[in-house]
Length: 300
Image 1: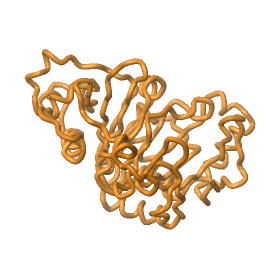
Image 2 (image 1 turned 90 degrees about the vertical axis):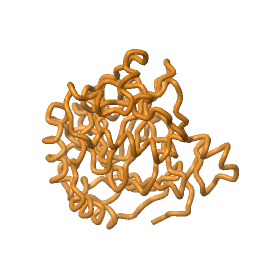
Image 3 (image 1 turned 180 degrees about the horizontal axis):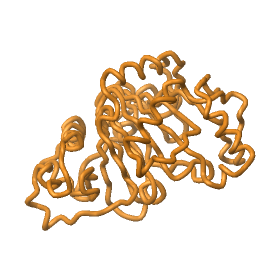
Image 4 (image 1 turned 120 degrees about the horizontal axis):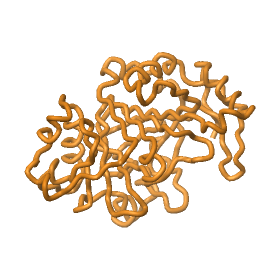
């Protein structure tokens, strides 16, 4: 595992390459403010943070723990407000809504997580940007030229042959027809200052649904809108499934702040092709290869 190397380019930074942590990696920390909201998995509204943590501090371990605790609770629409710490503020701090967020807790048990992680560890980790290391399985895109190379794409990892159907069953209304053609494993660790800057996934190649399975520790994914001041925090409990689509995928940037990584985290991400790409000859070949679960890693 390439723990101590740095793959940062341009404005990217991590602890390995940073000499002034306050102005570099710590600039990637999130400080809660009056425009911070938390997505509710029960009513699907985004509630003001003051209803979750009445007195937030640095937005790190305590905030991650409190948000993910909500996601792990049982409840229904009628009991949504009672899951939050300060429901009395509901009248003065109105909710906002972001269409296209779906979260399912506990899609992977601890035993299954152990098995999946053991299989992931049989592949080689490659250094990436912003303190991450990664494993890629999919077509190799040239985003500037809008071309794909398939020479090193042999399929998805074997465990996805049974994991993907389970994910579809977990959120059938969202993932019932989801066909993954790319799989990436991202390893985050607070010791490296791991994070990912707010971004859009490419619109030319990758389709409507962005699918992530969260392993080993709780975390938060954050949505920011270039045209408004609000930030929406989405809890990612250990073993959970998060899907971004519609407005959450196409209007809001998504990212993970460095102080929302509180332990080693592995994210399994799945991508689908755009409808237009599915109709092309190369898109059909990508789909055919992806249906084989005999992966070797895509070269960097």
